[in-house]
Structure formats: structure tokens, C-alpha cells
Image (cartoon, rainbow, N blue to C red; front, side, top):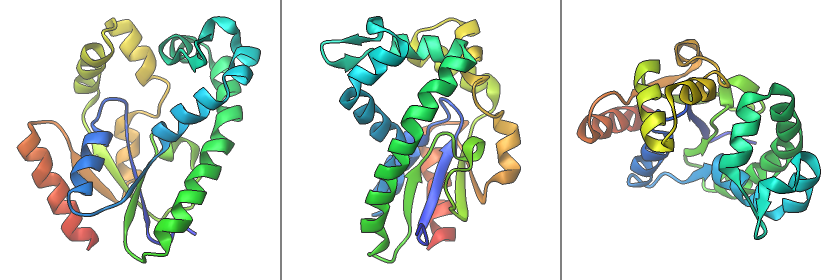
Length: 192
């Protein structure tokens, strides 16, 4: 299992999804753990309201932003969510990976907490890197939140600098899109 898989990871707001999209232009298939998580949340609204309260569910959808505020500020609640959702995510990733493995060519699994959780026996990994100050600015802009809230979100993951030595390849996302495209192409050439 995961013989052809490459873990794609990074920190919050480093540009993992953009990098995945750029790799798809080269024909790479991608499994997105976040998309799987969103689907699982919405399929399990009853469990979410049981675990965290009815205020986190509306119209059979989990209010992810509200739930995020809770779990990013409370490690016990975060652990409760992770214990529930991570096995379900892994089950779906394995199911999709089995199909991709049959093609006998490299594919990506976008796993935000790949280095933190070490739940997947994947040999090669790509870290999408941006320094913490850039991450903070991007989170503030993307999530329309305060600097304090942005830092709180980042503090829920391993520091980006600590992930660098753990990665097989590093794609730097610190400049413009053209620079990022060149970075993706460079790593793509190393992979193929």
C-alpha cells in the first residue's frame, strides 16, 4: 500500500491546494484529505452535534468555521474531533489509494497533518514551505481573522521550520505564481 504515493503537506496557508492543482496539470492524481474530511463532517452531523453541541450544525451541514474556533482554542475538543474523524479519513484515503496504486505511477495525497500525526507509511513527502510571518499574513487575509486567531491556528500544527528536515522535497511558496510553477516543475522532474 502507498508504494506510489507521495505525501503533500505544509503548514496552514502555505499553498498546498495550489501546488496540488499545478501537479494535476502534469497528470498527477491527488487525494485531498481536507475534502474527504469536509464530506465526512457533513455525513456525520448527528455525531458532531452529539460531541460538540447543536450550535455547530445548521441545515444538515457542519458549521466548520464555528467548530474550528472551538477546536483551535481547546486541545481536548480538538483531540475529540481527531479521534472521531481521522480513522474515517484514513479509511477513505486507503480506498482511493488502492485505485491509484493500480496505475503504477506517482500520485499525491494531500495530508495537512502528515508530519504531526505520522499516520501514513508513505516514504516520499513534499513540503510546501512559506515562513511563519507569510503564513500569518495569508491566514489573516484568507480567513478574515485577527493576528491572534491566525497565530492560534498555526500553533495547532508543528512549526513549519520543524517540518523542513522531515520532508523529501521542499517547494518554496514565498513569491509569485510563476515562481511557484517553476518550483513545482523542478520537483516534478525529480519525481519522474
